[in-house]
Length: 211
Ligand SMILES: CC(C)(COP(=O)(O)OP(=O)(O)OC[C@H]1O[C@@H](n2cnc3c(N)ncnc32)[C@H](O)[C@@H]1OP(=O)(O)O)[C@@H](O)C(=O)NCCC(=O)NCCS
Image 1 (cartoon, rainbow, N blue to C red):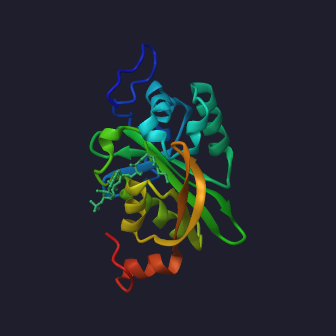
Image 2: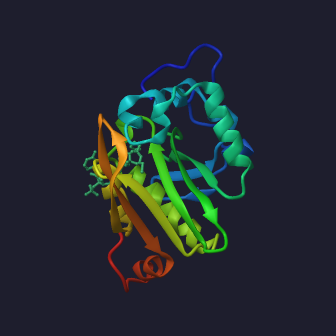
């Protein structure tokens, strides 16, 4: 984040106290750790992420103003739910909270879930954090939650997101025509998914290469 925290607010750019239990890593990737999101993560910077038109241009949050209160309500609802897993993405190098990733809602009968993420500071885009977080969450969803399939709905214009999911081994399954209202017109939505068997094959070297 380039902005400074307002007086009295937690400094989102400062490394978190590793001893604080809520900030202990839950999952570990190459350059990121994923941990639970807490209300203390809802800083001015977090509010700015969601109100930045570049960051939110492909997110459904953009249609309404995002206030600290509405974001806190969202965090509370997700962390209380057992049908979603909502984690903070923390860059290992800096210890900074750089975004969030979610799987959910989880369908526990058919064992599939949606996956989505946001990196709030544009300075962190294109550095591999997105693919790293997706890979780490995908591994967790298959190996620990015993899910069978993960799927991502991506605006066709969102090249960065598409490339990040492809890099992890997701495949495009289809296109929904003119499903999303974006910049004054209707745009397509692409549908990507990965099956557990594809992930396992990639991990054992039998399937498509996962970078
Ligand atoms: C989409 C998003 C998660 C991608 O994360 P990221 O960390 O920037 O992606 P990565 O660095 O892991 O990049 C993966 C690949 O995509 C490429 N890429 C990233 N952004 C790109 C862009 N805007 N245009 C073209 N390629 C892009 C990278 O160069 C990399 O390719 P490579 O492996 O060949 O070098 C991130 O840009 C973001 O949070 N955007 C705003 C919110 C959003 O759109 N979320 C997705 C909703 S489904």
